[in-house]
View 1 (cartoon, rainbow, N blue to C red):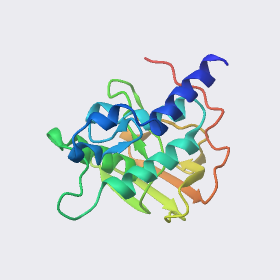
View 2 (cartoon, one colour):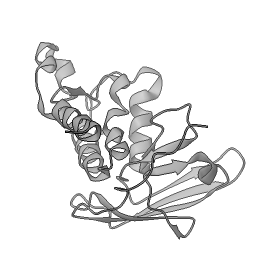
View 3 (tube, rainbow, N blue to C red):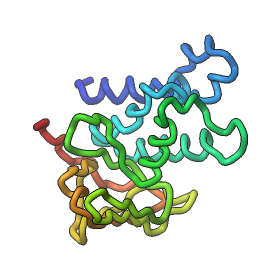
View 4 (cartoon, helix red, strand yellow):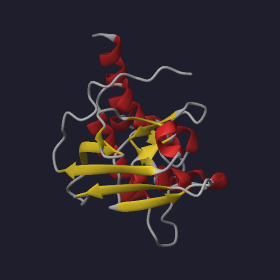
Length: 189
């Protein structure tokens, strides 16, 4: 088993093991999927690591699972402590379809949008609009992406492409696709 396969095996097992979470108080167990604990903010980047390993469809599955089961509009529907807004920030970014896995890098990681449309009003007066055609509870997988009207085959979204405004358009579907599986990880600048 090579390095990528070992990494994916470990990442998968994080969501299927249930060892560490048994020792958590019942209130904290609400945010657990196996040993992944969404209620603890340092874990928030973990699901997006599937994109680095060429399996963005697995990220889509877990993102949908967390958004639909661990967030809500009723009392007590947040699965963790919203320290400085991190739980809310994760939710907003994830609903728009991308997340700053490493805030010091110059790109975001594309997961899977959870809503049909969002418009970000940038500080320079420009807008960045996200649309997700076909996003439904059964259509959780990215089929294709267009960035400013051009096909975008990478799960890595450069900040340069976002900061001047523009559009990102997702097409969603009910089955995993080959979108993003062969993308190269961007080099750090």
